[in-house]
Length: 410
Image (cartoon, rainbow, N blue to C red):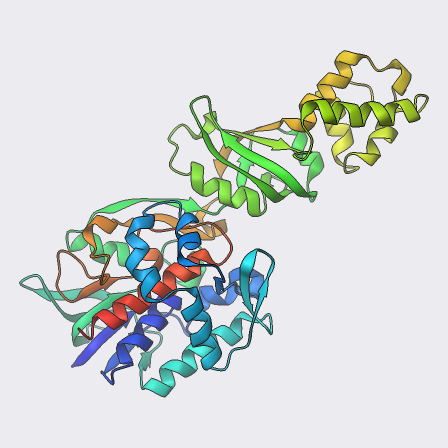
């Protein structure tokens, strides 16, 4: 019989196993894949943004739902503790723009190695290629797990760290949600989080591959504004992607009437309409005989010019001295309000995280233990918790995993 069994070998599961084993207890980690940290390996395009070097209050502000639930987890094991832990395990770290923390080697595999070494040193037993089929309980108390091979393993505590359903090829197939639902927990509907957006407009296909920096992206409908930030974005063959778009997607994910949402891009957020018009007028006055498509090169990326002029119904070859004030105002309007309409989110296999999951109202925020089954814990992405990009989602995994692991020792 084990003291604790952890189901799932991602960041939340590995950290839970480490903390549960810190007091010398017997801990078994079960992973269905052939190796640990399969999803962690591909995060941050293989670089792995392990956390964000900001304080707890800032981390809480980056949550898109249920931030209050994370107070105990974050204060029990914050980003500074994550960094210190990884460095003590021999992983050199570096802090980049936006306080994003990466391994100095830029290799996510080094993060996984550090976690594996930490488990090995503490004596955590690991079972790979093993699938938990069922949780065993008696009188609302966890008793262990049953594997797909029908083998049963007993434990006083079981920690579920099976992740969501995004990137299913990494093994995230919603097993934890099935376990939770079977035992009476509510599951908040699953949605794609931090995911590219498909748009209605076809003219943006001409912009495929164009990356924009220092633009403001606002997502809104007729009732409210969901998101508005300055940063980077990317046009694709289906719509838009990039950091701003991914973050916006998490704010509008639960909007039922998705197709009523507009994505408005302000190409010149540092200038109001009046100042932008003066800037354009200055350029026009200097190049009155040139075609407008050539004069706009000083203001816009080359790919953007024909699309913008088409929206303004201005002939690209029209000379500046023939441009009317109304046409100039239309240019200002389009530069400040380049509008796209949301058609759909891309599928779960392109979503960085899963929104929804085990309802946190069924979980004790001070321990991560189930309110229904004693000795059963849920951590990481399996829960209805998610945050913006920048290392904040991995911090959720590390913090909730650590808290659950420590709570098994009480």
